[in-house]
Image 1 (cartoon, one colour):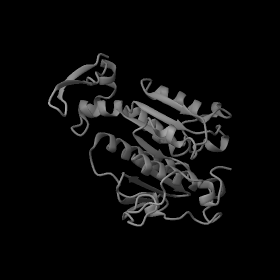
Image 2: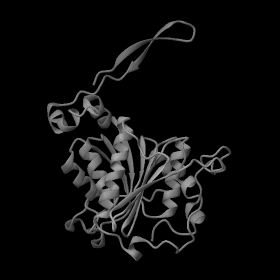
Image 3: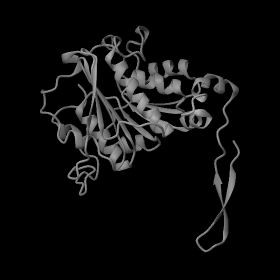
Image 4: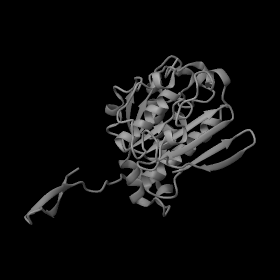
Length: 291
């Protein structure tokens, strides 16, 4: 695609030109594929091009990551990074719809890519089959607009939070447990996960999904809500869950929203932050990031 120039003026008044990217041109097939988006006044062709130009980093290709990856790709998000170092296990299949029975034993990033390609072959998939940690997180996240936390452990949740704060990137967060789920969105300078949970729970207090179980459909509900949040951020429409925590009780089919306040004393995003670099989160939480 050719690059055009825009005439500008330098500080001393001299004329100058600066390159600008021409607007994306959708193919006839893409116009047809996304036609139900394009006819919506909140999206339109401009909004659809925003989605196609956007990049998201999805940390976790499991229960939450499955609906997230599938719906973001279906919506037309142009670049999806998938971070997951695990292989598909038969115990994943009741909730992780990115993967099928024939994928057992395969890296999750590979089976995720295959599924996404069937949904939207135009999507750029960046596979990151490694454990995200303090040493590699900034390099991994650098090329993405939005961070999406689809993980299931506290060390990685705090890592993703601090990563978003330090890099000035939005973070969409979700979590699930048995029949319960939570969703919220953190924007730069407007609070963070540490404002909500200043300290991790003591080791062993919160059982994992492997220990307590999770309703198979629950990740689909929570992950879809998270995908909605990410799409709204990209489009710049609606009211995202900023400074609000949506709590879902699937057993009683009840939803409620509680307010979250930015903590001026927060060590990450407060007035005098003490978290100025990524730390050893396994030591901070007193538990491993994965078993």
